[in-house]
Image (cartoon, rainbow over all chains, first blue to last red; front, side, top):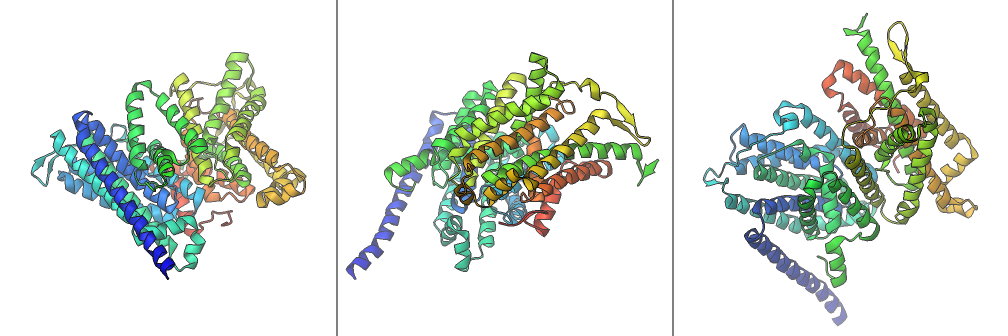
Length: 324
Length: 294
């Protein structure tokens, strides 16, 4: 009896200690992003936060659902276009533009997800890639995206009609809130019963089915959630840079978010943030070198896959024997 | 003469372009299917290797004065050998892992190769002459058929059918199909399966390079020529399903023709029609037209 009670008591204690660790790290991360603009260019940090949220959303799908999407640029880019268009042409306030764009990616995510989850593994990756390419060609042709020019000079507007976001600190506060909110939501989802089922599907889908779970519904819901949060990141990004362009929907963007997550650590909580920070920093420093950025990214891919599959945070977590 | 209100010249012209594109779709999806069958890896580097084939032909001509016909032999050999090196050094380390790592690795390699060539040659294309023997065109009465294009279609049909014959009708192909079904058992019969895997990858890559050489005079030789093409080929592969060699060939040609016809009747959709067909096929027959769901 005592042994049973002890083993029953141990698991929650372990989880509580993990939760405390994650809470501490979360607060530390928030503090870093709060204080960093004192020494680092704030627009750069806003870019990091947007891409970190994008990578976290992507990680929700691959890291916890085991679904490798190679087409997440479609959500990021479509949301960027929609929020830019809503803010510029329809005169939406920034929060409405972002919400509307996110709602649109929910619809897009539902359509793309319903198609993609019909196949598994490698086919899933190819289908998402092909669908994203379709969205890319669509964006190239429809008039409202401005074709090769994209949508430029998007007004940042006034938040709730009150706060002027052309002030860089006001904008920073918005991005900061969106990022931490999105991150906290993903953390909550991962640790909910829904997240546990998702992990079960990743480990052994047939078994999850035999236990009575409608795995397609779980996968679709995870896909839509991931799409919506990617859209949130893309919509916010287009207001920060006041620009939505074809780069956002191109397949290279999908590749970048895969790379960020892989480098940081697939299926880790903080990995995508670290991965995004590293990749964005690298792009910033190598920007003048042109196609070398692509080469370096490719090399990182190869090295990660061959020798470094846990990623940065995954390796640290493995070393500390803690899930990070 | 008009057909459905479309000048027949335009219709047959686009049909021809469709057949040409279809030839490349067929060759590339065939290579992907052969590699996938045995290695269980989707070779994302395929587009880059197609581009390498074209560049190889370009170098052979401009550095060594070796013409088109020998390039058809040498370029696939060189690029195929490079593929074998990649398989031995990198891919072979991943067979015990989740198949997705193979996809990520080959994606990274594609970025490296395309990035290096973009650095060296920029994004604009380099011209490659049509060989003298295939200059000119035939007047078929209803349209002009450039000789080189006729050759590309004929050659790719022959190559595709030869590949089909080797895999489906010869002893070597029987080993290959057996290893696809159950590699340990085939190995137990004394067949060197790892070497077979290596050679299969080399062969698939060589097919991509061959397509690249044939494409060089039609499209220009450029670092990005394979990048977007490979995504269309992925959609072709999803539509056809990778279970059947003949299936990949037929799907490749068929989709090329459909794409060409779309260009005539509804040009706006010509770049997306294959993806739309993919979505419809996924709804109706998720395993693909010729595939079996594993």
